[in-house]
Length: 117
Length: 114
Image 1: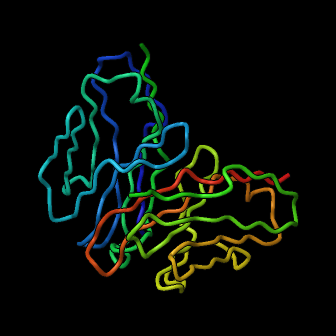
Image 2 (image 1 turned 120 degrees about the horizontal axis):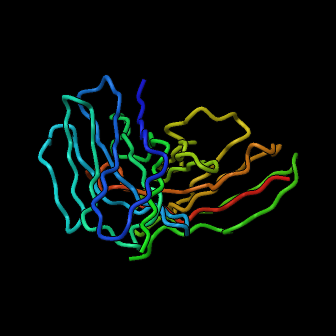
């Protein structure tokens, strides 16, 4: 069965600190996609990144970076120099390979990040 | 380019009633999925629609049903509402059959069953 685990329920940091959100996944498939989404209080899920299972290259986008390691089935997300606007719930998700072109995602429980000024 | 829009934003229903939630897909998207997000939980996949037919379903009972229209908009219907149906219902759209383009989510409908 496929599963996504975000062990950190809540994280609180002070502005400008770096913070890493952990994501561990389980799947028997060799082809899959991994995602990170941000959910602000308004409710919508904001897409941050998609990574396919064949691309283990780490990615950096501004203050955001992602570390994908298939050997440990992890896809961790780091925010450098955090800001108050980064406060939100962050979800890691895994796609069912049969539905990679459609809408089925398996989400973790989410990590609530609070960035204090 | 418009995103995914959902209506209504909030809804209060009584146990046993029926409810219809609506979703307009992002322009150019032909596939719609629905998710239920209980408070403090991650979204759970309900079902997806492509070409006006259901082509994938999560672990939800038949009283959860849906429709997709020729313009790719969609409805989620829930019959015989139960208290546990109280949740944020999210709609997501994407494009199937043309290569992966990612999923765009709406802001959701918050349903409260009393």
